Image (cartoon, rainbow, N blue to C red; front, side, top):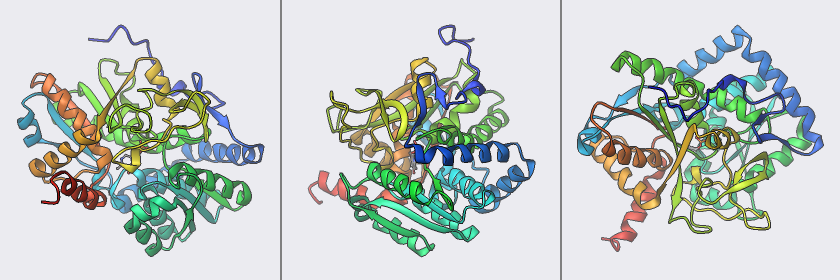
Length: 410
Ligand SMILES: *Cc1c(COP(=O)(O)O)cnc(C)c1O
């Protein structure tokens, strides 16, 4: 049965040559970066069509990162809910603990191919920084990671991990001292050192070609999932669910299924403490069109266009803007968006740990919380695949403190 309300989609027609997904995307950067972005796009397109690069990438994704990842039937969660079957795409099993290594490894290989000896990256919670530091260590490249001073304090273990692997972590003291400021600082560095430096951006966001390139590096998630669910169930799933920060793990899972319009896809944003100014990061619940950090998209802003503060229990979803491809498919009605609140996430985090023996990342738990809700509404023969984008080891201390605060320390 095909969904007549969704127009036919040619997923490869986007973005256009200027990096546009409809009105979203594009290249909003200072002139000094235009040459670097064009050079990157050319190098990327050449690498994409080079069987030798693809073979090399595939080899390292297997041997270093641990692909393919399992598609895991969450039997006890499924029985607990009593509805649709829930499968988890286990990106949490990858080296360094999240899907981020797919992109970091690929961009570092690309930089090496371009003859760039120095790598820079931004990081929020530290997952992308750790993945980039690991890839740089493996290939012997210099690595500088920009991180907000507040985030460095909150995620001091990830700072130590990056330094152990030889990366230099530079504290950013501007503004809110979190991810947005770290991106600004990385862009500033890139403008100054563009000759020998590649900027490994960590999500499907920013100026063209990043949203497209990062998406392509995560397509492997959906390619594997499609093959795995066919082998396991003999058919495609009914629904796909993934959390959306910038949108990379979600578009990685969704992309292979975009043209299968009978499959429902839902991106789950951070509902935080509820949909009030400064209390959440659900861009599709209160955001509107604007430009931030090289890209035109949906963002949380005030009436003057100033970026609103955001909040989420998970640092990886705590960003005021969303990837342009998601904004486009939201507008077209192909990808739906929901949000999970901090409290729903905390409950699902404990449930998954107790029933499956899997501690999920707080980011991924947003997808899980919504998957549990949807599974309950659906009959038993339906199939849901949720993206388990990362593991929760990084989050256990925070959750312990939150639970202690709730129970008054008992
Ligand atoms: C960074 C991160 C996210 C959010 O990033 P996307 O680009 O939206 O995927 C989600 N899950 C985990 C585990 C992360 O580390």
